[in-house]
Length: 329
Image 1: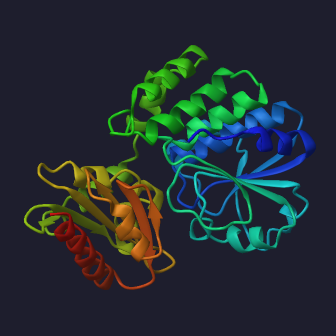
Image 2: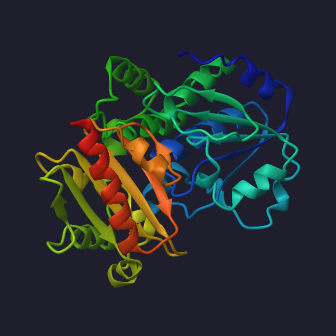
């Protein structure tokens, strides 16, 4: 359903101090979207601050050479003077990490720009379109509504957002309009070949070693009559390989690519405790599984975090996946 951007345009025209944020463990869609919006709002003379309640992934550093995005640190008093907080690529409290409690207390107006099914009441004006393949599309639409022409830098950031949330245009959410938008971003100056090289051909040795750990024979398993593939990362794997949690992005795709597998599940012990679970599917609604554990996302790509042990999380989640598969027969 098309988004009415008029209220967003009014928010921008009537206010001066903006804070932009995205979800914890940010990906290319979230980071590309807030950085694109930052350039546009800053160009309009607005005071803009960008913050994430997470570590900035090294993979995306090239998108923010000036270091505009800052890690959030409690108590966050420097954000209390914000007129507007814009949350992009999520609409749930549990994806905002330590920034969430501060956001609840801020008197600022709030806006959510997102394309995920799962939404909490953040007390915000929602600009949500679950049919959009990426929040990057919605950021593009918002920028169009503001009447600001795209620079090559903004186009590149939006291209990364669009491409990463469609698996570099391989997933079923990449449609004819997706390619039309990509073409428009290329005309504005995005260079897909250079962006691809930065994202996929400049990996670190620790990330490569982590991939090897995930694909070890005793970890990568196929169950449920070969319909489910799953693997996991322990906290100790990061120290052993020199990797960081952000290096786990996209590793679920190595699990999902096994022939005949309908659902891929990836378990990651978190440094603070608990287990993050990612789901990918070819046709099964895994958002329903994620929501059982307090998570959510898209029908074919979702996630959740369980405050429990790895073994318990694996048992409970795989049982729930099995039940959904049985019901879908």
